[in-house]
Length: 221
Image (tube, rainbow, N blue to C red; front, side):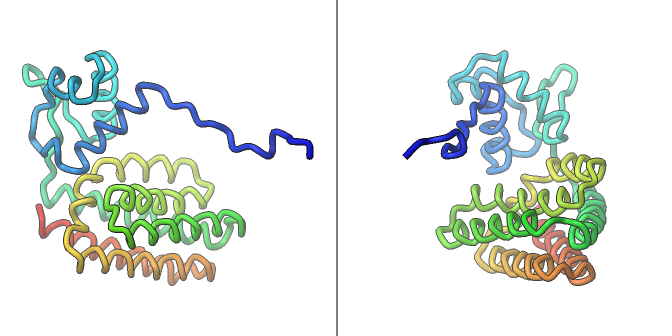
């Protein structure tokens, strides 16, 4: 049987910058680098096995995302958010996701919606094995995918920027079995509405999810 290029899945090549960036972001999300903590370039570089140059480039990217602050005479500090910061950011993210969800229900292709459904099923599999970090990454990818399905690049860009700023807070918001189970149930409602292309129901589910996210996260601030 002849083989064609279509028979193969392309190999994704990641740069050193991408690898260091993801590892450093994970350290912040998981709390190994705590809010308010200075990032010791020598120590973190040794942990990751890289020199200061790629580490500094990753720090600059995280600063642009809002996860890190670079302060004179202090260096890079993991950003610390107040309850008000959290409420303000989640309020805007909620509006962006509700708008994106409504547009997606009206305009997204069946293939796009099914792809989001598959992400959800993959997320449930990670929930079953209690793989919190990979679950969280897929969870966030679903939120991004719903907004991206609107086809509005400006909307997606704004959402990505704000979502990146509170990744650590949203991660800790699922600590404890009851909180985590509640978040999963809310995602079930969101996906059910998306599959039905019911924009009103999806908007309501997203709003409820964001409101309860605020409560869950505020408890651990």
